Image 1: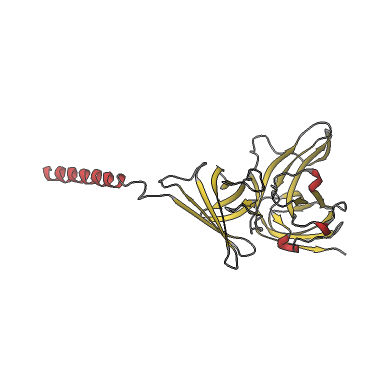
Image 2: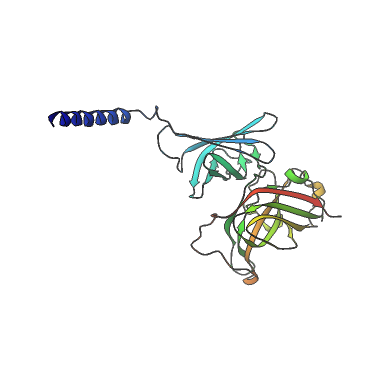
Length: 301
């Protein structure tokens, strides 16, 4: 029995010693280095690196480096800080420099495991260049309560893709004044959608895409679609605002967003009513995900 107690005592000492040795490693020996990778529909690669030099999970305030490598081998880099991390895997990133004399806008990256699922918004590079990333194969519809209630005001509730589809990816970015276009989308959605719509917006070069003035609203689809959960393919028709001259659009970017409509008010009057977003749902929360997303646009003669 004495021998057993002796061996047990030695084992306890050994375990304590081993734990002590492991615990004595410095933060420089155990750096955190979170690396996430993704590829957009054009084959460009994105690498997000978050490194703070300590053994903890990433959090708001940590620094990031996002490197974009294009198919021809050229690269762009954005550096800054993490503004927020949501439970759904959304990283909101704030570039460290300004562009065009204004505060740099935030953009979002959705992470799943070690994979970048989507990049949405305007990315400001280390040189001050603004990049609007092409569509990823995942599209996210987020809770969006917009506008104000009151005389002469517009407001509404919707799930929004936050202007993430760059028309230059699908029609070369050149549209005709007063044109009409057929938009076909396909993919696999994890939630049924009942009142989906498309909106077209103008993004002047060097300007944030987050909720622009109404004079930059270019048009919308003329038909709503219901999409069942699972694999789907749907076609929309969108009419562009004839008052905007696309022949002289210069460096402007035209963006689309897919939305699930709930209600719309103008001047305090309810124009459309398909329900509302419950109060307990945070602004920007992912409400529906479309994977294997694909889009094509053709002009209607």
